Image 1: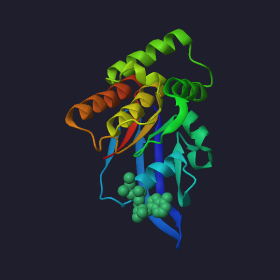
Image 2: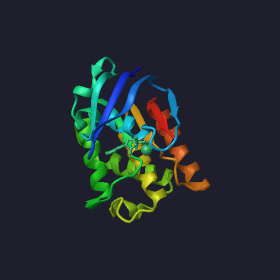
Image 3: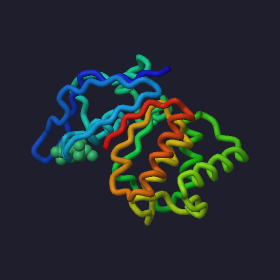
Length: 205
Ligand code: ADP
Ligand code: MG
């Protein structure tokens, strides 16, 4: 059992007019296997919370703590957070031309686990995960998110979650902009990943 604990978190972002305080004391505890949903109007700071947990450099934590099983998450670099088991599915996934999906996923898996996955099981796992998410196998050779539709980008975020098996997943509006079929595929994927790993989920919706 793991616990992600956010305590009295205050976060500012630097804008042209100086620092602007966005989060003013967020407190939330998430245990393994739990799902917590955050809803709120646009601009209320949901993505700010997600980015602050993941370690985006634009967001300055002015006070408060985030710990994972007692370890200070805010003292960790972004990659250390990922290795500690924190995963962020971004609201607007980034396109990475020149990097294939298969290369990206395998590199990420290797970095997170500290060792390369066995090639034979890895290829099988990746194929299965893509099939589960109704992604065409040809996506493996496409560049990361390049030219993907909104729904395809969201599926790719969940594909990462299924393969990386995080302890805690922050899903930033993974449901937004999806049609009914895609929504079902993506939510089944989240549930499957959660069941397989017992992850805690922070669902921004
Ligand atoms: P939500 O995800 O709930 O829609 P955000 O966390 O994206 O809200 O934004 C909260 C507020 O912070 C908004 O007023 C937004 O304009 C501002 N903000 C967020 N990120 C930045 C940034 N990188 N630069 C300037 N302002 C930002
Ligand atoms: Mg947002």
